Structures are given as C-alpha cells and as structure tokens.
Length: 405
Image 1 (spheres, rainbow, N blue to C red):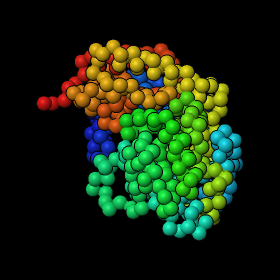
Image 2 (tube, rainbow, N blue to C red):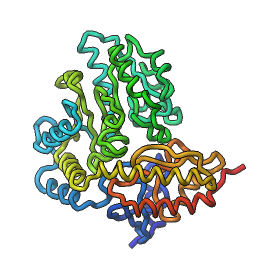
Image 3 (cartoon, rainbow, N blue to C red):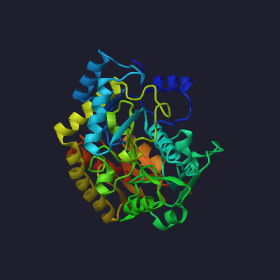
Image 4 (cartoon, one colour):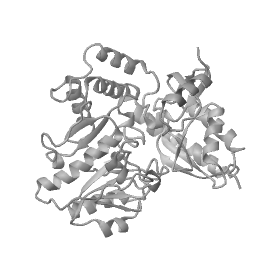
C-alpha cells in the first residue's frame, strides 16, 4: 500500500493546482471519524464544510445509494423519474415552498435563482428590472453569476470583467439597502447567516426589514441557504429560525449527505417565472441523487437531527462563550448559530498555521472569513465528540502560531 508521500506526489503530477489541500490523504470514515492512508484517525468537525449532514458512511444512506444504483441512475430531464417527484414532494411539504428545481451544487442553485428573478420581471412586462443587490463579505459560488454577486473581491481577482447589473452593500445595514433598492431591482439576495464571510449573524430585524423592503419595491427576496439550511442552525431552514419567508431559496451541501445535489425552492408567487426551455440541468434531479436525498430526510426524522442541532448548538455556544470569557486564549469572540459556529482569532495569530496545527493534533475544522476557526460537524455528532474537539482546540490555541513580524 502506498503511503501519504506517494499519494501526494501522484496528486501533484495530475491535479490542477487551484486547491491547496492539507497534506493528508483520507481513505475512509464512519460517523465523525476519518482515517487516512497511513491509518491515522481524525475527529472531523468540519463535516466536509457542512456537507456531511448525517456523517461518514451512514448505513441508511449507503444502502439507499447502492439500491438505487442497481436500478436506475440517470434518465435526464426529458423524462420524469419517481425519486425526483418523491423528493420534490417531501421538500415542498417540509418547507412550505410550492415548487422545487434540482441541480448539482449550491452555485448552480444560486444561478437558477438569478435567472428566476430576472425572468420573473420579464414575464410581468418589466424587462428593465434586472439589477441584483447582494452584500459585502457574502459568498454565493464560483460560476460567473454567483461569483459576480459574491461580495469578496479576493474571489474576483483576475476573473474580470464580471457580469453587469449587480450592486453590493454592507451586510446588516438596512439603510444602505434602502438606498439602492428601487424600480430597477429584480432581487435582493442574502445569506440568512454569512458563512464564508466569517459566521456573521444578522442584526435583529434585518431579514424582516429586507422582506418588507422587497414587498414595497416589488423586488424578489432570495435566500442563499446552501450552508445555513438543512438543520444546520437548529431549524430545517434558517428562514424558519428568523421568521422570514423569501420568494426563493437555494439548498445544497447537506441535502444528500455528501452526494452532489443542489435545489432551488420557489414560492407560488414566482413559480411560473421559468417556463419550459428557460432553464435546465442535465444531471439535476437524477434518481441516484434524489434517492440519497430521501434517505437523508429519513435519517433526519428517525434520529431527530434538526432537534439535535438546536440542542447541541446551544451547548456548543455555551462552551465556546466560556473559552472566550476565560481571556487566556487568543480569541476575540464566538460567532455563528446551531452547529455552524466558531471562534474568531486574535489578529496576532496565524490562522493558516493554526489550522495545520489542529490537523497535526487530529482535529479537522475549516476557516471562515480568514480568521474564524469554523466548526460545522455532521449533525450526528455527540456532545462527547464536541468536548473532545474543544479540548484539542484549547490545547492548540494555548500555544497558537503567531504571525511573522
């Protein structure tokens, strides 16, 4: 068997260098544990960046994928398939949205929402309403439409010119939004909680204020729930947590427990905005992906994972607040909600070096916003596993690598 060094050498010869992965090669996992090719075990509190909603190798999910693969994998959207119909029924019943569109990823779901917004006004005879308003420090994906509305210039570098018709304002600032939303605005798009931007929770009344503003102006309100949806914050959708219903929302990440799938959910108001031929996805809604997604919903219900996220999220918040309150570790504040939380590091700490040190100590996490240690574990995580991870985190932060002078 080849060791890590051999695998890394093979990877460097053939894989494009647009990623900079940690120098470990993972081979198998179970629950919240993964093992690399050298046999070393890690506690995974990153959850594949909030993707592994039901953990690694959940037997119900694995069996559903295997069973469907032996029957029907793909038919294209020239034909109906039973699993897609069942999954659309399940999602709309659970969320109150009227229609579902399936694709392969979060960025594709966001692209679909952008097209929905512009076509909605076109169908109503308002073809001039094309402007999309997004927020600073947002992240909506890497394809060109999603990239253009992403409010982080670092992702735009060398990619210009970006698409037109987009305005960006500070997140959480209703007055700034009021100043730009008007008769030319097709939609406002926000994350209910900014994830990649640093786990930023919206100020009280912000999302409700956006709903009111969009209702007054005639613009659609779009929620990017790619990272905040699917039980991650302690409710099935973050919109439920904040009591605000958008006209459409995007989903991905945890939707199929690691199998590639994205979705756009649409209200009845906007459900006719994409008539036949106006948008499509060859792989979207294929039977295999939808069978996986149906299995995830069964696991959610059987194991009470949304309720678990809410309860453990409150516990995690208390424990992270205690770390901050101690004042002995180089952290500034706790951020986030539910099982999407983290600690913002002091400016003197090197986040990338700290991330690598945590891996060396057997803990997998991720960084958000450049300086936030993000915990987004599988929703099946136990309190003892959270405690184990926080123990490692404390130990590393006690001697965290400093930035070079």
